[in-house]
Image (cartoon, rainbow, N blue to C red; front, side):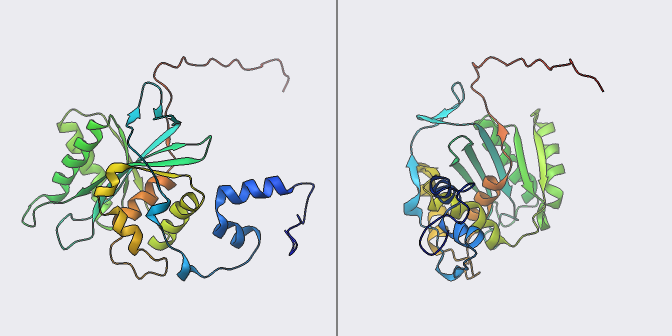
Length: 256
């Protein structure tokens, strides 16, 4: 758009489409990527007051949270040693609706083990598996940077011993933490499309949001990093359990 607010390419990008784009990606991303105007990152904040809180649980039969539709889910674990003086070890469950581009931070598990625990990773895997079982989740993505490198195999071993059939996805992150958090959370939050269950108010996540800055001056952001991982992850598809499977027939009337 020019200085007067007129579309530079009205045949392809009329005003309604530009406004829809801005509402989808957020003002910061729109100004930097579509208008090529750089904004100072030091002003960016994650306001927990912009979250839409809800009390409803996920209804698997109808694939809904309250009156909101759900099309996909992602479970993401950003691990650490889990001891008091180590970084936070956090597992986050997030749902998505790709139709309305909404996201739901549904639950978060902050893991802690005893400082004298001889097998902290295995015991964390037990806790995460309990978390998954209680929520009927069978897929989990584990960040394998650093201490998480051995966790996928430990998680599979723990699940096998307990007779649980799960799928573990390895995630290697190359972007810095501040960029991951900013790119995954801020566009949804600033456009009013990020929801959170009311129980999240009782976790450290709210204080992490209040204290977070993209210029790297944050001390506690492990929950935010796990949320960003869950939101950035390609969700697995969720359909209402009562929905009938669709059958598609291919057109084979062609010549090669």
